[in-house]
Amino acid sequence: MVRVDERNLPVACAELAGTDAVLAGLHARNGPPPLWERPPGFPSLVRLILEQQVSLASGRAAFDRLQTRLGEVTATRFLPLDDEELRAVGFSRQKARYVRRLAEAVVEQGFRFGDLGKLDDDEATAALLALSGVGPWTAANYLLFAERRADVWPHGDRALVVSLGRALGAAAPPSYDEADARAERWRPWRAVAARMLWHDYLGGPAYDPASVS
Image (tube, rainbow, N blue to C red):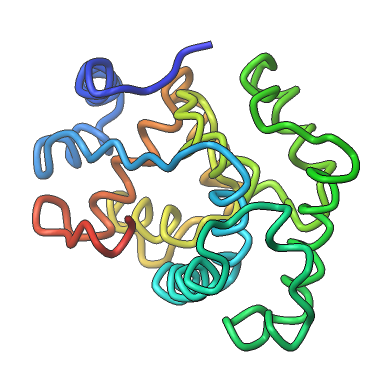
């Protein structure tokens, strides 16, 4: 399994630019994107759940309040929080249920994030999808950011299809399925292509790192 790092990221970008005109344009305009990584484990998956269907800033703000409340975001520390406490830090009722079940999977059922590293992409995706509240977008982004896997693609990411539509010069963004189909040509570096598209969406070299940190 290939993981994206500071050494192979620019190599992969150049390879993609050499085989795809859209990515070549992004590469010429922006250069390689940031690595954008998050530490593997419970906190990163919680944050991704909080970021579902809201802005990154909103999800990050809720996570920061949770971290302030707990000191350290762990499954053991999360479980005693009641619904009122979770609403106060920005959890919806649904996301509170999702993360509580995730914490129970860790504490009571022995789910171990470290075991994901022993699995291939499909197996790791299936293991994450078995967790309550984790859909394809969340699973792919966890593997992309926390494990830095090279060939995962976040189906359903709005920023990606908007960026792709702009790069194609299209009047409207492609559908998620159309974006998925185009991403097939970017194997085995689909996660790098996603980073290139996100980078352009955020303004290329002028982007604010705090917006995605």
